[in-house]
Length: 171
Image: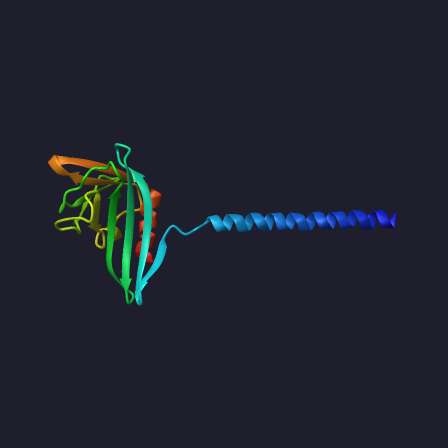
């Protein structure tokens, strides 16, 4: 009888240990998936780049890389820019033209074009966000990109992405 009780106790102990390892394994695997959305890169000594990068679709279904980055040198933010990179088949942008940002409440802000004459590629735009980002509410936005001939492209930016941009600003 005592032998039987010790055997049952051993099995329960083994079951408890296995259960603990399973829960610890699940915790480790879920924590590895929680990778920070804001990336910090050390460019040169004393210079740090904070970046948020997402792929978003325009109203025509074309995919754009939307990258907000902040360059910090010796603890001071040099610039905060929003770069839009169109994938092949995207429209060619004109420079210099400001980017229009419309909030969910209808407020319209404009960001100056960083590329005064020519961009590195025709589907790339970059806009100064240093003064605009602190005033943006953490809600969905609409980016309105000017094209030749009074045409525009609209990219809807989800609230989660705007919140990530604010995290870049605070970094």
